[in-house]
Amino acid sequence: IHMGTTRKLSMGNNGKLNGFEAKTPFLIGVSGGTASGKSTVCKRIMEKLGQVDKDHTERQVVCISQDSFYRDLTPSEKIKAEKGQFNFDHPDAFDNDLILQTLQDILAGKKCEIPVYDYKTNSIIPNQTTIIYPADVVLFEGILVFYFSNIRDLFHMKLFVDTDSETRLERRVPRDIKERGRDLDYVLNQYMNFVKPAFEEFCLPTKKFADVIIPRGADNTVAIDLIVQHIRDILSNHGRNVIEAESPMSRLDEAI
Ligand code: CTP
Image 1 (cartoon, rainbow, N blue to C red):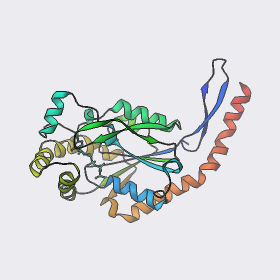
Image 2 (image 1 turned 45 degrees about the vertical axis):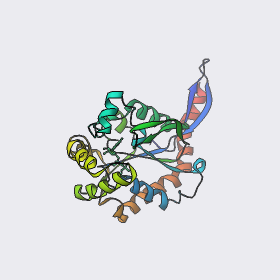
Image 3 (image 1 turned 180 degrees about the vertical axis):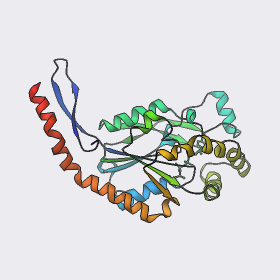
Image 4 (image 1 turned 30 degrees about the vertical axis):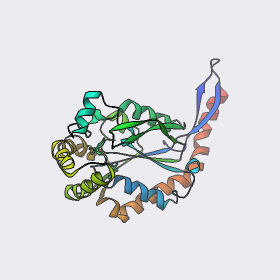
C-alpha cells in the first residue's frame, strides 16, 4: 500500500535512522485534452471535500497544474511563441526533470516551491513561487501528465477527463482571448498547427493508462461523486494505515 505509510527517512552517518517521519500523500494524476475541464474537475473534488475555505497550510487536498512547469524559452523560441509558432503541446515544452523532482519531493512529504507561469508572456514569472505544503491528497493536472513513464508511475490513481473536441475548442477560443491575451487568428492557427495534432499524437494515446475515464468532464457529477467518495475513504483510513504500516518499521528499528 502506498498511502498513509510512515517511513523513517534520512539515514545518519552512524547508520542510525534520524527519526524523520513523513506521510506519503495519495497522488492523483488528472489528464485530458486542452479545455477538457481538468481544473474544474479538480476544483469540484476539492469543493466536495470542503477544502476551498481552508488556509493553504491546513489543506488536506491540494491541486497543482502541469502548466506551472512550462520551461523558459530560448530567445528564438520566444519570438516563435509570440507569432503562435511554438509548440506548447509537445512533451518537451515542459521542464520534466522539475516535474519529476517535485512529485518525488511531494511523495517524500516535503514542502515544495513551484514556479508561477504567465501565459501572456509565455514565461515563468521571476522571483515568484507557489508553496505547496504537505497534504494527504495531491492532484496533479495537465495535458501530458501521463506521457513519460517515470512521472506516470508515481501516481496512485489516474483520471482522464474525456470531453469531445468541439466542446474543447468552443471553450478554448474565448478563454485564450480573454485570459491569455491572444487574438482569434492566433488561437485558431495555434490550434490547427499544434494543439490538435499534438493532442492526437501525445495526449490521447495516454488515455489507456487511466484508471477512470470521466466522460463530459466536470458536468459528470456521478463520476466526480464516486471519486470523491474514494478519496474520503482514503482520508478516513489514513490514521489506521499509519499504525498498521508502522509495526514492521519499528521492528526494523529495533534490529538496527
Ligand atoms: N499554452 C499556450 N501558451 C503558453 C503555454 C501553454 O497557449 N504559453 C497552451 C497549450 O497550447 C496547451 C494549453 O495551454 O494546449 C494547456 O493548458 P490547458 O490544459 O488548456 O489548461 P487547463 O486549465 O489546465 O485545462 P482545463 O481547461 O482542462 O482545466
